[in-house]
Image (cartoon, rainbow, N blue to C red; front, side, top):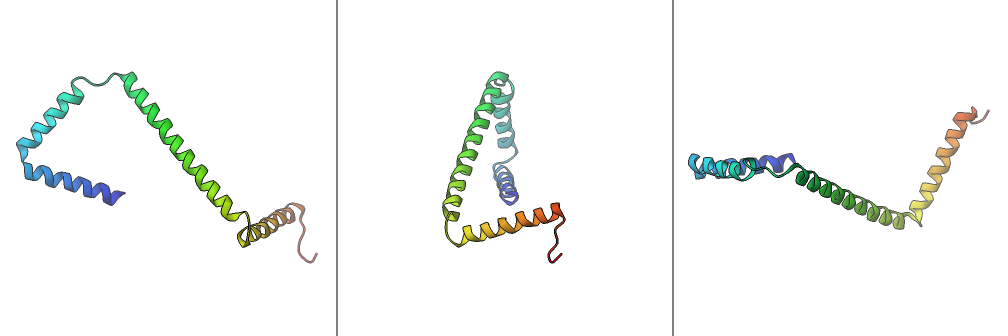
Length: 106
């Protein structure tokens, strides 16, 4: 991501370097007049940020649900599930050994 951002910034510098100082200043003046002289009302910004946040959250939760379903369908049967069951049994027994003070061979 850093390399992509660095490339974009470099491209922007090259573009405005080729267009010249006057073109850059005219562009910045136009942006200032459009966005900074009459900014959007705060309620519009808050509403837009809330909508974007819920949209991103819904996308993330949907993606997590799909990945969970795919992983569950892959591990419900076969050697992966058997290995997981053995691991879980050993881990559970190891915790019980530790809690009860049981040692192998004693």
